Length: 266
Length: 329
Image (cartoon, rainbow over all chains, first blue to last red; front, side):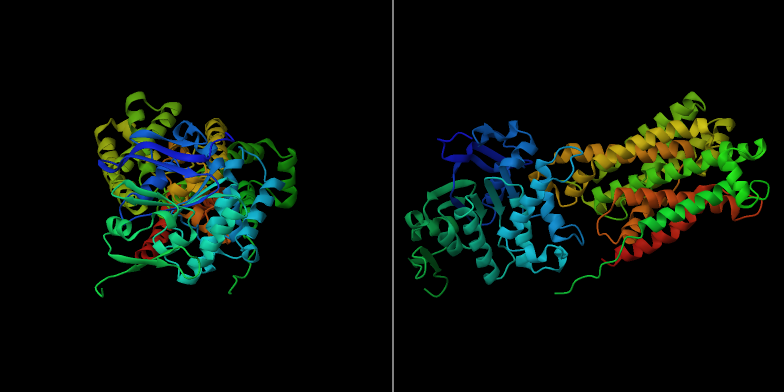
């Protein structure tokens, strides 16, 4: 890691496609170090695709993704997994697995063939469970937990990888509002107290505005705006990105922008 | 919050049961061992030559063959059921063992009854069947259930092809093939068992070394990749090991159904573990095949049945049960 660079992760004019369909063309984005970045945009705008490309799951058709200054596709998947943790949308918890066993799987990138479980592995797992407040359920089965608890277990697994970077693909989807806030607070703590650089795809604009240091707004495979929410979120931006007429007021609690949809009432 | 009651693993029981069946297989019979002293004499090498030959040359090689082939089939099934994430995704359902048998038939037809050519033919046949299944089932990625349905279809087609092949070759070849197709441990001499055993043990070791990758793949391709697993490479390697295990087993015994299907599932229940374990599957597979072979030899007075017949009868029942249960999902 070069100390003077302020980005750990960046995409440089990448073109991303699945089979024949191009999702994003000539897209560039930088993830600032030590910040909590949130990607927002309408369904199908390429948020998750961008996250997949930035975590080496998808090979760009052209352009490149740089992780710590090196092309991510010239690094092995294990090398990448030591620098970047990813929580995909599609994670399947094996039937009846216990919390600690699932979190322990996050140690895989640090283990060599035939290497036994080491003390540092256990320390990393314990720390990850403590940071996500799941130590009490360590011996519970994952499928007995509530949605919010289960999501924290997945975050703990990614934390056990001990990576400076954490990428989260729609981590709050399917959770009720209380669990969403609880999880976002957790991400903020991981960012501010533990020093992780965080990138999350979120659907709720108001959550994004409140928690993000750096907001990345996408539309149709392009980055429309990036920056501090209070500096970039305007009525015209939201209207152009989501096609939603709205009113923006100051969040009475956090002072960040609060998006009020006009809908049919206005 | 509800917590599940902790239940101890029953795999050691399966292990002990296997030992008991092993002892029975080796020493049962009026002419063989007279009581405990007879067994002791056999173990220490003080028995008469006739009895030593029966036990150590004939029976021990067959029993060892059953144990290792059973273990290999169990591991093969565990690998595929994990890859496909479905208890029906085992090589004896998806037709890889039928493909292996096609390879054996072709090898007999072309090169005569040469042991190593048959083994090679079986591996190639198994791999070809696997490739066919994967190509036909591919539609923007693989769904486990589609793989199984396509596998069943390919298996049926290959079975028909095998029959046609047996009818169109010379009588002598057809006879060899017919004997083989029943799936039997008859004629398992040391010289036949040992090389296959070494190969099977080697393959099982590779599977075991890839165990953690296999477990991570169960969580989805993206999750596994995010944790540093080379998804495609690992899956290919696991498939190769799984197919080879089934193929090598098929090459020496002919197709033996049910073991790779049932062993991982029985192991899972015995172990009280949600995920499929390779070592437990190996133990259960060894136990199942040894027991089935014991039944094949002793269930009918004076007749030794092909072990494949015993396993397929048991397997048919188990398969119906599984399909009924899966169908409800």
